[in-house]
Image 1 (cartoon, rainbow, N blue to C red):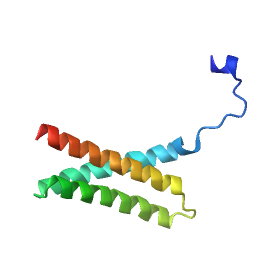
Image 2 (image 1 turned 120 degrees about the vertical axis):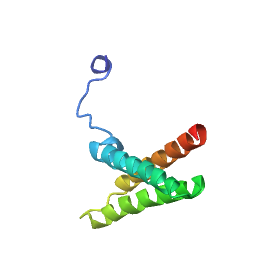
Image 3 (image 1 turned 30 degrees about the vertical axis):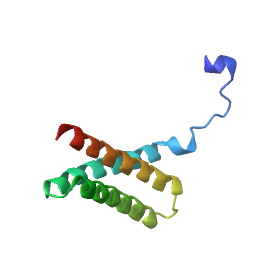
Image 4 (image 1 turned 60 degrees about the vertical axis):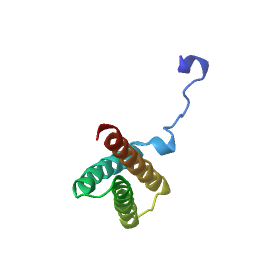
Length: 98
């Protein structure tokens, strides 16, 4: 129906939601969740695990961007969003299930 009301002339994918950004967010979320579980199993508190997992995912994401030929702030934002999502998800499951 979109093509009928407004023709799709040169419509590009929104910049932020390109496949690369989704990959950045997904990897950061997975890294953040995994590191949360690892830190909790070492005996640290939920808040310590939350901060550590979020920090680790950001360090890895920003570190990767520093070595890219062109630093892309949208990639860093995707890393932040994914890392935050992974940490919040893991923290929430930890609070509800344990």
